[in-house]
Length: 188
Image (cartoon, rainbow, N blue to C red; front, side, top):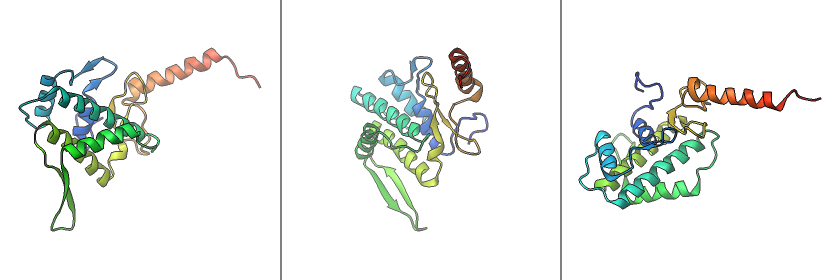
């Protein structure tokens, strides 16, 4: 985990967290707004692609929201929505994700496709690695509907709800207080 970012996830799961956060719902910005934006994000993530088509951009956005939905399901350990599963399966198939076995009785998943399909496949592989090592359930999405920022839950109990208690958690508690106050005293 990065020492300078308290929301950072361990290992390659951080790449997944950062990918989900390419869309800042609260600020209304999207790093994947256009092909140059996707190309720049992939380059910053260590994968150089020459061409990005409109269909690649649409797939990248669909994957991002599928990952957000899957991380949201981590809050209550509920099922991942079918549409998100279909998007994840599509990316894995297009990336030609395969398993290779290693001499030390382990396995390794790898995206064999090139270009954008391979780069998106790397994100799905990072997700499966996190599922295997047990870190995936701690990748969460802020429960504040106007935020939805992905964060790595470092709470002892693994029950974090907000990206930052000082921001979204405080907002939620203030709203709950206002709601209780507006409802008036309880009648018994």
